[in-house]
Length: 297
Image: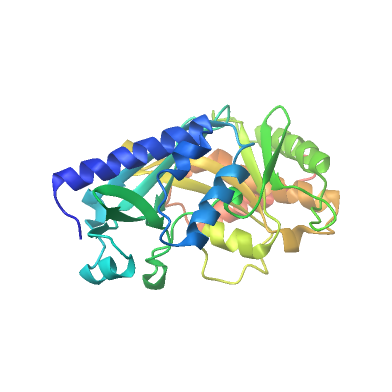
């Protein structure tokens, strides 16, 4: 393990360059932060950078949080990277906002492996701790090119549909139904909340499971309302997302999709007020009641 304030400062400087290049869409500068020890990882990083091009990031930061777990690298890790004289694995916080939708940053954890060759640090892996239950955050742009579509209150992120990828329901249907669902929620919930929501439609359940880092079977789940917690702001929610399970929502009627979206938007609207301690049966019961109420009053 690297240790020392000098190494930590150099790693943070590397993360600062990477984050700036990501936002500014400077591929050369971004890839300069990635080592070539693993050609597969290098190629995946380049694809991820390109696949995220359409996403309108308002801000993007990477912060090495040595205070949370220290350095998780082992001395034996140095031997995995030919020519490396030091290896370090701090927890890295990824903090980003999607412009026009995230008031506060979405926060996720990454476990980058940093290796030092000839005095220069590079990122050489992001999956070195998965075997001990510490996976790095994954997003839709980790799995393929992302396209975006907008309505007055929603941003839809999904992969390109075509001969090889089927993407039901249609983009227009999702956005129109989301706007209708929002109206139903507003008629019953008058507590102020940010009525701008990102909807994510992965292509496979496997993508969804990896993004949510679930360890349970998703077959019986149609959608999720996910939020991240920013401990720097107390116990504050941010990065609200509605995510579809594509294999469960396919071929459902418009009425079903409207109820599903209404249910999930109730969670997004009420989460800042309910917090983490409201019993699940109340949280889910209220969402179900609103979703299935044909004429809210």
